[in-house]
Length: 115
Length: 468
Image 1 (cartoon, rainbow over the protein chains, first blue to last red):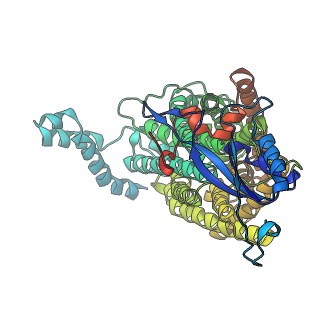
Image 2 (spheres, rainbow over the protein chains, first blue to last red):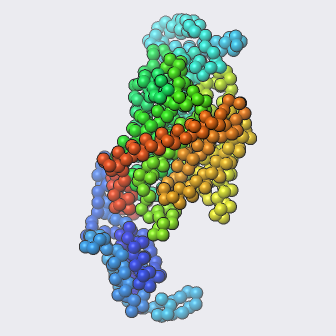
């Protein structure tokens, strides 16, 4: 079992959800987060004065998958989150972590069957 | 008549004495009481006897109390700008809040300047029935303050028509293009139609000319058509020219709700509009003297009843059709009732007002769904509230009339002409803007929010952690 953490552009969430559904991944947790990578910050202006803003809004997805689904999920997320065919700086990142165990609260099932 | 004249004298004297306080003689501190006494004495007998029953009696400040009422009403209607701003902010997303604030700020500012320069003249100048040709860059004769009061009152009305459109065009319109449109509607579209319906209001100052619609018996007391339908149909043109917001219609063409970010702001806005509407309707008497002035209280009651009935009508309709008493729709219902009573407020009974408001509330619910279905995306329901209910209010003038002076034919003519004129000129204006500087923002700007790209700063900058 693996935990897939994906950080994507907020505008791509619908496309990512669509492609994940097509890959038969239907369960996820979605969070509003902030951060920056290669994109860096940007400049805003308030009452004539410029100021730097380092944190950009992003969306983070947490998806727990069985091992045979990892590549499918990663491909689906990449397909949905990449801007255009060539991609752009700021498209995001995907981290894959080992998931030690997983439990379903309703039935107390554990392991791969609970994912 | 004579008794009213005598009773008015002390009031007149007091007002003129107060005016005298501003005179240079008093400011210098010398001969002050003498100057005031002289001013009071010479001003007490006007050169012409004015009829306090005629709205035209305001000419030359014969009744300063009417100027006072008109200014107060104008200030109330001015405050409706805040109401519109809050409603539009509440019904749209936070990422666009700063932009919608700017659009509201600017359509009032550009509108005020344009109307003073050009619009007032086209609307109220000497007219052959089609448009005015005098009173540009409005300046009043020395000592005659009435034109300024009337100008202020009419300016805030013109600005109301202009600001209706920002709601329907919210979240995807280029700011600069919207500025161009603001000039267009206050310079031409609004005043030309306004001149057809209201030119005679300025009869004492424009040689007694009048517009062709009013000459045919068209009645629109405070502007269901002149202000609200004009705004509503221009909004329709804008929404059509722009196209729907990204994400409004799903792949199967079904409309998706894009929830606003603050029902609290929207409610605040509606209450502010409701309050300002007392100036809008009751203030349209522009007079407290004589019969015209007495109507004021009746008009105010009609206004309130229609608004309340509008809320109830919308509430019942949305509750029955969707199973939930929707806040946003109920708020729209209040505005629908207010727009609906704006034309008939001076010639219907209290019970009639309730009926008019109730029906407006029902109409607005179905109208909003209709426009959603035909793929016209209107984030705040402006087209339904102002355009459709404005037409309803104009027709209601004849349907619920208790004075015997209204004609259904004339009202229908006015409604049709309003739509034909406004929609076609607005479509032309937006087409010109669209194919020159562009009307709609780029998709990435629309996604990220207009605040950042158009204005360089977010409205709600501090609502999340920041590293500076």
